[in-house]
Image (cartoon, rainbow, N blue to C red; front, side, top):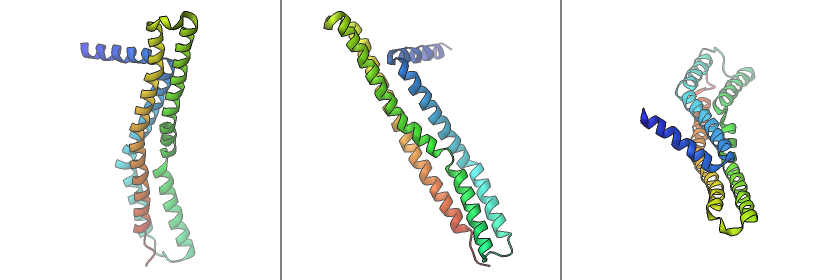
Length: 175
């Protein structure tokens, strides 16, 4: 139980070290990863069920060659594509937002450094170091958040496109 207390203290100290912008970065990363986990769970369960239901519905049709049948097929594929790609644009937005928030943390941290320098000159190194950490920690956190999301959003996007293409290929027009 001591390790849990130590972990919370370390996280709290890190958050204080980075200043107020680091809280926004942490919230952004949390939301981004919540959506990533949701999409991963969707791909493992709901998507497979939906694909199977669409495929079974299409195969149970008597007629598949008319214009109406073609439009129904396109509707099924579109609905599947929308469901499969849901949330990916929001994840991409959070990935792009992370380095921007990091940059905002850099600017606010440097403003703190300049305020210390204006008040006490360059002689108060300890006060300047606090501002420098407020400038660098959010930058690092924003970049780590963005990098962690870039790989997964790329994999999710590719997987979604591949699944839609697979469904499209499996719904044959013959019969």
